[in-house]
Length: 127
Length: 127
Image (cartoon, rainbow over all chains, first blue to last red; front, top):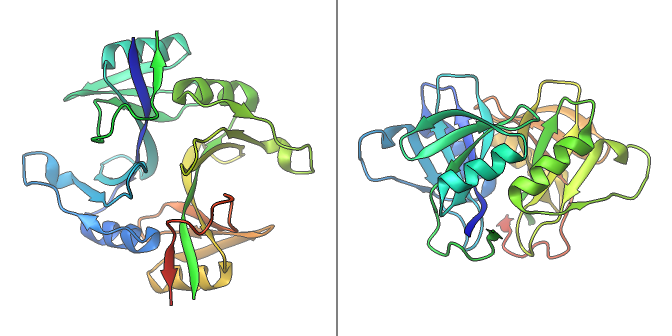
């Protein structure tokens, strides 16, 4: 048995100024921009402060064209990826701890480890 | 004074079978596909059943390339559009009751009338 749920809405920005994009989206959605700890690789991310129980909204600096993608958080990434493959999704690439996948609709999305402290509250259980 | 909050995550699909795409995304996210009443124009939409207080996830059949976009719900659309313009967003097109806008980051998003019955719970208040 494993669990998964919609975790994040990632605003991928092809930009030379991620802080400017984060400032807009934070103001637009009324969410404060939360700094990340300055670990390696984290400079390409900005988080917006989500209300309790709400999906995370984050910005990511990317080199591909700007888009929005969804992340699904799961306590067993391999089991979740296999479940999604059975539904018709395809593996695209493994990145650090997560998998980039492609839906039958053509949308890219990621399967990530649990992102919010209240996981697996409200998550789906899969046998 | 008006109010706004993140309302929807719209999965725009360039597809010849919106039911197939909705079936995938419903199963992927563990959300049932909820039919819409068969009013004119509604045939291009499918809603997923959101948990209480969570953003709506919907699918829309589109002719442009597939993408994901965000909707902001507001009780005064014109005031919200003006607020977002002041932040750097641009009006793209008015469609039925909503405005399509473009963020400085290049992402399209919409400003829509309140979509969920608990509005304006948790919404931002703007003077």
